Image 1 (cartoon, rainbow, N blue to C red):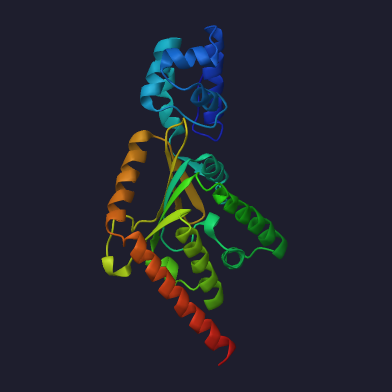
Image 2: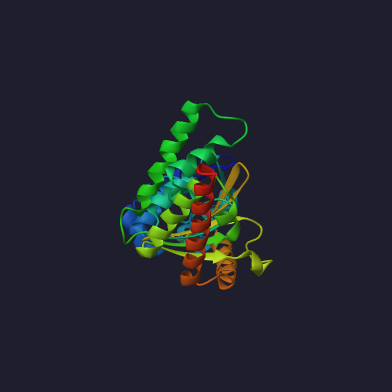
Length: 279
């Protein structure tokens, strides 16, 4: 069975795993015990939602006598491209028990206030109709429910100082946005660190990254660029991105000092908004 590098690769891979498992007369639970994997992970692979790491693939080949099939076809599944709205990354975000994210220019979507998100969605090119913008806005604001449960996911946010200084939507919008992040931080729902301009070069200058951990499945990383995104599941790559994140975090301000800076910048925006209202 040939698997090409196309959007159906993961589904084909999962279907082949299911076919060979059933041909061997094994349930998912029995295969999980023999291959030393969780049953949930096997179910996700068969459904085309996840991929095994190389060690898992080798054990699947051994148990199912795959002749190297499961290991040899792993490269076709690496770094799947995702759409602009990063639907797959958003779904993984909902499943995560821990998230560490670096934002280089914009507040992460699940932390955006309605006014901030509306201005971001209104500024893209080509221009969106009000109806399309409002539909995207509703989807983005729905992501904020990620924080409804106080205990999960654990969120660590690493912000470039540029995120604080880029006046998206104007002074009042930025004041409200930064105070929203402050409120979540002061309630201990999220943890925030700022990478100040004074640091100069740092390990994450190349762009934004989101690291996600799960209850039973291996961690993944999502790296984003202009109108594109890439999910990495290959564990060696994920670990490299974790190291890069940790290295940049070491250059950041402490949580307490970061909140003090957020508070100070929010107050500056508040004063600016007042001057605009009463020149």
